[in-house]
Length: 144
Image (cartoon, rainbow, N blue to C red):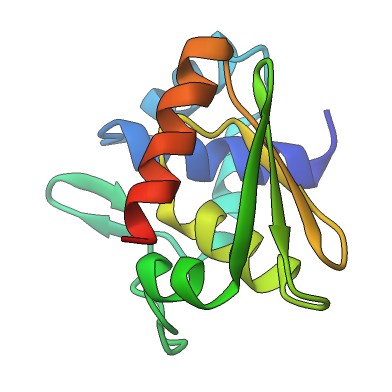
């Protein structure tokens, strides 16, 4: 596993569970088949800017401006939502797929496994057809 992948997994772990110690973090990574030494974890924690609190490690507070919320971005850019089994294809105006995909990624909806954005098209991958249909409805509801 490369460093970028390991850092991504650390962030994923911290978003979904409480991690009190580096040993807890190492164990959570091991469960994801990611091995890391204590020295490596110390470096990763420092690089990610994680903060140690009495409750455990937490993600740093973002200092960048939050930008528009997902509903605003959907209403501004989304033109069509097409379902294809466990995926959705979102159509936007030219150059608008990136901002919408980024807003979806930041929303961290559990239905979305990942997104891939082109210039005016976003591929949204979900777990199954049922989840895809529910996500399509959720997006269309934001247009109301």
